[in-house]
Length: 388
Image 1 (tube, rainbow, N blue to C red):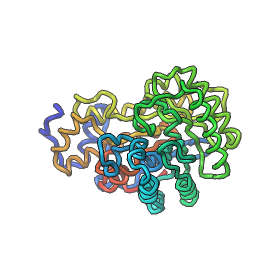
Image 2 (spheres, one colour; image 1 turned 30 degrees about the vertical axis):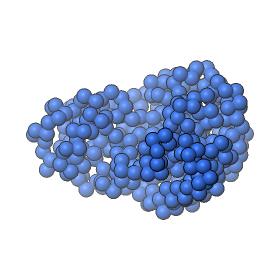
Image 3 (tube, one colour; image 1 turned 90 degrees about the vertical axis):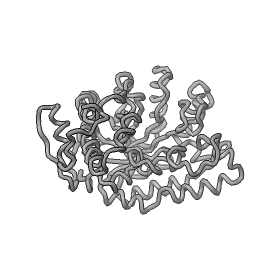
Image 4 (tube, one colour; image 1 turned 120 degrees about the horizontal axis):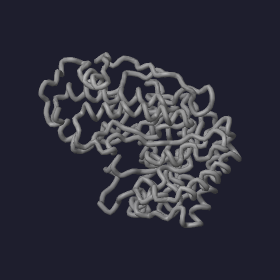
């Protein structure tokens, strides 16, 4: 079916999209339009005897991303947290404090726990611990996040999202276009020192079961250099967080580098690979929605192969569509579109059970429900509750 056509779509049938997708497999599947509780398999998580992690990212909290809350920015020149704080000058401290105290609160942790989420991934910039340049530190907010995870029984994956010198040119390192790591020896050494400081600070927190030492290092970084950093940073973490309690999490980014980094340090105990799976970034711009979702379902085969090679988590994923396909789908009737979104969500959830866990990006995004877990749940795209 051409993706710009709605001919023959039986929007009154709540199982229609699942049936169309499963037809490609030669089987049938039923779904409940009311989206009952979704029971997911129990599998060894980040360390032995732990259930599979069903989590969300708490993005745009301890490291800002402009696209997630653009109202904070008053100029096109303010592109990231660094340039925002630089432009705010003396006002930066108060504005950043107000944002971090309101973007995520205890009520959000309570809502997530009640819905069935058992884990969170906490992205943060290195400056949270100590202010640097225009950046504003907020370690007390991070301390509070850790305490809320303890209080509500959630496992916590610490995610060092922005390193000194920036591990890539993207805005989500904190400072877009400033790619100095790991070539800058001072930034490299500082990164290791800061990793150890965070590990020491939170070593007694039972909720922490993973420490991701770098998010999305740029693919041009030499693999030997990055693996050496993984070994050195894990050594720093292990001084304070033992392998039997906390996994060392390393990044395989982009996805095609799983073959390089998944299992790259076999001599180190309890190492988890973090891979990010965004269907919308995988070249499916010119297909129909059924093929698009079917492709997502086929990911389970590859994930199963990765699982045989070692432990891994899907650190980021979403319900986003390629722009070309999204522009067509937004013209569909709401009821039909919601059915499609439910099929898209449940298909990915089923495939991702091959992993040791997953974390949706992100819990909260302004006016982008495909990226906002809270909005997606409230629109009925996810089950009423996850049980697992």
